[in-house]
Length: 111
Image (cartoon, rainbow, N blue to C red; front, side):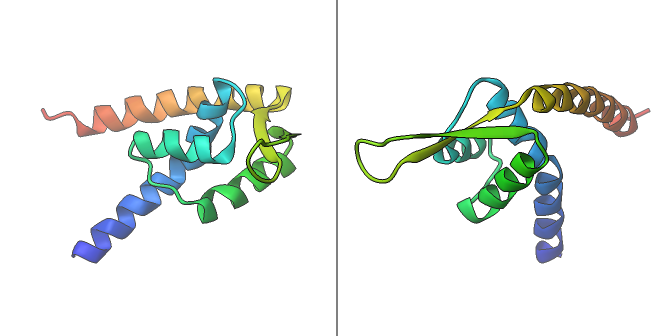
């Protein structure tokens, strides 16, 4: 039973991870480790091996862009931000999230 619940929890988190990443980037451009820190702070446990493929997919879909910035300590850093299409996509997802949240809360209500 324990293994099954952990798998279900992980699947639920994965389902909203893309939305959460876009929400983080709505606040402004961010370096991947900053995105991971914000997600972890919100209890959305994420590792680099999960984040980087998602960032690449979102970039290839035209939702994100990035710029390189020289680092004082180490290699250049890649900072991600939303594109205009990404902003519109996020607005649409936010509407869907609100609808899902209302539906789930309605279903959860006790009579």
